Amino acid sequence: MAPSAEDAPSKRPRTSNCDAARDPFHRPVDGLAIPYLDQRGLKYEAGKTLVDVHGFAVMMEWERGLMAAHAAYVCGTDDSDGSPAPSHPRVLNVGHGMGIVDEEIQARIGEGHHIIVEAHPEVFPRAKEWAAGCKHPERVRVVGPTRWQEVDWEAIGPFTGIFWDTYEETVEDFFPLLPRILAPGGRFSFYNVYQPHDAVRHVAYSSYLQAILLKQGYRCTYHHLPVHVPPEDWEGIESPYWLHQMYLVPKCVKDKEECNNPEQREEEEAVAKFARALLPEERTAAGLESGQPLHTLLWKAKLWEVTKIAQMLPDSSAAAKVAAPSPGEGEGVRSLQPEGVPLTVLWDECVKQGVL
Ligand SMILES: C[S@@+](CC[C@H](N)C(=O)[O-])C[C@H]1O[C@@H](n2cnc3c(N)ncnc32)[C@H](O)[C@@H]1O
Figure 1: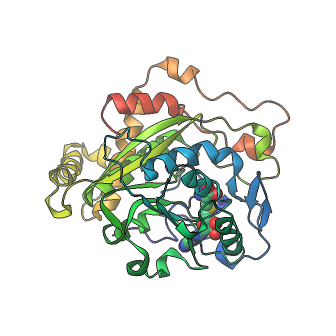
Figure 2 (figure 1 turned 135 degrees about the vertical axis):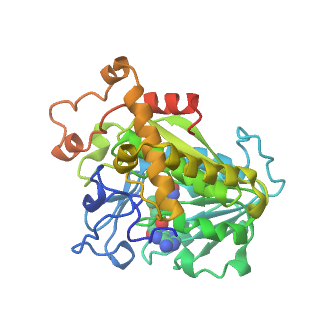
C-alpha cells in the first residue's frame, strides 16, 4: 500500500517535515499552513523564483540545469540509458511553475507535441500566455487549471515522454498512472529532492523509488549532475531544500511486462531474505516487523542497507564532510546543512556496491 500524499515526503520540504530523523511515511501535517493549491498571492519574480505565501520556494532559477537534463531525457535527445528515442515526441510536463522545464522541452522537441498540465489558478494563465508565445503554439497545449489527478487522460494521452514535478505531493502517487499514459518504450522522469537533508536518507529513498518502479515494470537509473547553488540564492527563502553538491536525475523506461518481471521477484525475495538474515537485535534496529506492508519493509531495508554502507566508509570521507557555512549565512541555511557523509561520496560507494 502506498503511503498517502499527506504522509509522504513533499517535494519541497516544509518546516514540518525537515526533520531528517523522521520516517518519510509519517510527517505531521502542519495545521497552520494553507495548502498550496488554495493559496492566492504567490510571488513570481521572472528569472528568479516562484515563492508560496509562506515564503517557501516552489521553483528557483538555479534548477535550470536540472530541468535541462530532465527535458533532454523525456524528449529523447539524451540516450545515455540506452533506451531508443521516439521518432515523433509527444511530451507531457506536469507542473508549469516558472516554465523552465517547458522552455527546455521546447528547445529539444523538434516537431513533436508538448502538453502541460497545471493546477494552480494563478500559474495556469501564465502557462497559457507562455504557450501562446512559443514558435509553434499549435503544437503546445496547456490543460488546466486542473490537478493531474482529475485530468481526462484518455482524451490527451498517451505520451512518449513524461516529466512530473508538482508541489506538496509525492511522485509515488503518480506511478500507478504510468501504464495508462506512457506509450510503449516511453520515458519518464521526475524531480528528485526527497529526504533532502541527509544523504543517507536521500539515497535510500531514491533506491526505494527505483525498487517500486521496478515492481511496476519500469527500469529506473540515476545519472548524477554536479550542483552548486550560490548561498545568496537562498536569501529570503524559508527552508533551503537542496544543499548537496550533486543531484540524481531519474531516467525511467518501461522495461518488460509488469507481471512477468523477474527482477521484481528478485527484489521482493531480496527484501524477504534481508529480513530473515538479520539478527533479532538488528531487525529491531532496522524497525522491521513481520506483517508490515512490503513498501514499508522495502523502505526500511533500503535505509538499513545505505546506513551500513555509510558507516563502513573510511574516515577520510568524514573529513570531506560538508564545510560549515561561512559567517553571515542565515540561520536557516546553517541549520539545514546536510548531515553526515557527503552525497557525492555515498553515491560513489553505493554505485560500487550495486545499491543504485
Ligand atoms: C515546482 S513547480 C514546477 C516547476 C517546473 N518544473 C519548472 O521548470 O519551472 C510545481 C508546479 O506544479 C503545479 N502543481 C501542484 N500540484 C499540482 C497538481 N496536483 N497537478 C498539476 N499541477 C500541480 C504547481 O502549481 C506548480 O506550478
